[in-house]
Image (cartoon, rainbow, N blue to C red; front, top):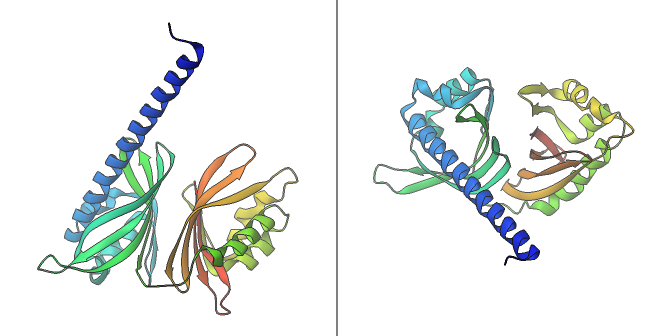
Length: 260
């Protein structure tokens, strides 16, 4: 006879099994789309456009492109960056839901003798539309040895939380964001202090409270850090992606804020 405790444990382990199976299935699907992207990037295929959302964002060291066609156009122009991409290795998948994922890893470049000659950081925000996983954000940056670590960002993240629980979106924008920063959420892009302050107007609410908790921080170089974690309110939890860069005064500020 099955006791009540055993029945509860059985249900728990069944749920755990199905959750792990679902996660493995999502990782497999995303991996397949990642490989499809690599194949089409190498061929500079026109069908590459179909792998991106219409409001997709691509950030490289030198350029930024927003919009499906603009992203594909930039990839076509930057063959020096994309030619030779041979493989990708995902380090972490941060699963917001079965339709939204942040994917962090490395891209590898090979020469004609199949020797790996270089590697790049990548962060991709995936969004499932219908049955297909499409790319919403692509950040592709060189790998450089750096001493920049999460400890550098902790106080600035704390400042973000302090401002977000205040009532002054204009000060939040100017104090925490670069002058040419981007805020992307729900496929809507805002650039610069004025537009970002307008997007931050939700903080002017005495009942609103939000916190950020770090999940993973990646030092790209001495002036660039990728920060991924959870935003948490009384009712919801989601993921944030912040690309921090130092300004001309060596102060860490936000170049890109993205969440879902």
